[in-house]
Length: 150
Image (spheres, rainbow, N blue to C red):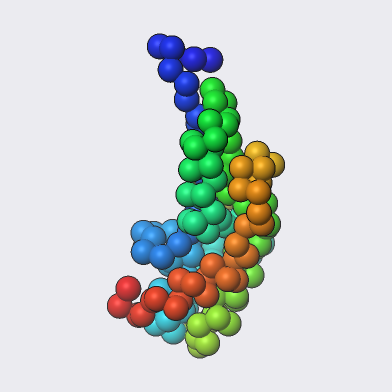
């Protein structure tokens, strides 16, 4: 519904990652730990799944919606629809960094942890008109410009 006669688009972002991301997010946290050869901690069994969208795909989808005047007065999910477990994400990052980090399982979060998070990104795919950057490639791009100090 239009408010005050203005068009709007609501973007719902799901697990965007990329260079210089805040150190509190799972991808940057795991990379930092792996580069320092520290143990990587996972809550529960690590089988909870997430999807990860590289920042360039996020930006390109938003700009396409803006420039083409699409998704007006509506919502578009911006993310990925390729699931990976948190455990597999940690193992992939350990592999890509050549780290000696070990996985350490902590008790599940007391307030619970969403076991699955996967958005419907059909509209985003239409906006992009291309495939999303694979997670492995995005991680390699980050690592190409990352040091332990980052």
